[in-house]
Amino acid sequence: MRIMRLLAVVFFISFLTASSQASILLDKVVAVVNQEVITWSELYKSMESDASPQLREMKDEEKRKIFKENEAAYLETLINVKLQLQEAKTLGIGVSDDELKEGIENIKKKYGMSDSAFLDSLKKEGFTMDEYKRRLREQIVISKVVNQEIRSKVVVSEGDIQKYLDQNKAMNDTGEAYRISQILFKKPKSEGEKAAVEEKAAAVLQKLKEGQPFAELAKQYSEDTTAAAGGSLGLVKKSQMMKEFVAATAAMKPGEVSAPFWTERGLHIIKLDEVVAPKDPNEIREEARTAVVNNIFADRYKAWIKALREKAYIEIRL
Image (cartoon, rainbow, N blue to C red; front, top):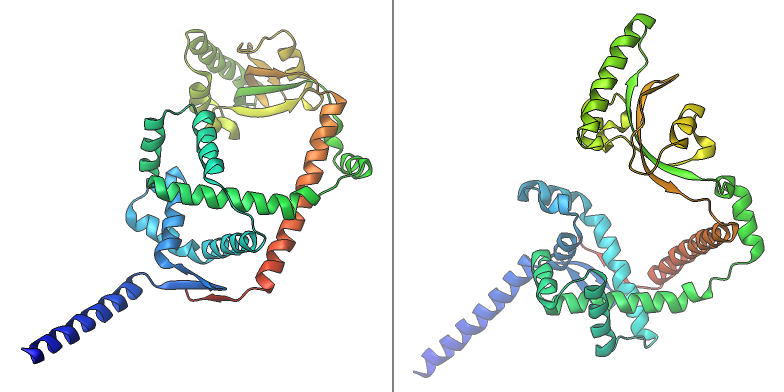
């Protein structure tokens, strides 16, 4: 009986050892960052949760291929996250339960979500509430340490702002701007073909008058490169527009569609989506200030991460 018990103990220990080894093989360590490890499952879970909706909808085989191609680059991102969290811990920076709760409430408020809708959203994203809280806590901690160590130390002078404006003269154009969409019929090679183009444009204009969506007709009939985007030209400064466009928009209100008109490029039908009022010089200066701050921050953040990596022990095992 004693021998049987001993054999049972030996078998049990062997079973535990084998199970432990199997777990390590199934979830291997892909990186060591100082005293912490990053596992294969942690890497892929993060890649999955940060994937775009288009990537998530792909077949598993295609998705795994893309993940495999990008795992080394994404691992570098996770290493940087670990280093920032470790630096925050060294500096005594943390997040209280009240701050975490407030963060969750702000997110629900921002997207107008009820408690049940929020939980449904987490489920669709593949998160449990505990997993989401852990990730949010980490994001808040990183935000705090970055603000303390970098962002709060960025100082911008009026000279810096003026220098930026001098280097980016397009920002100084405070004139009126328009969001415009167009349907373009390219200029024919001969004058004799003009009538056929005008007839085609008239037929499209009639469809617009009947209530058919401009974007759909642009995708179907426009011969411009913007057709795939529903004809959208984006935001266009009045000072940069051709004189024919200026004349066409002069009598238009947002939402209205123009009669067909010719330019050197061809025959256009345009829709005025929005009129953007001229910017105040102070508003432009604030935009320049923000751009300068962001540029300085980006450079200093990159240097800070580099310094954290240089003083850390990092071992990559991919």
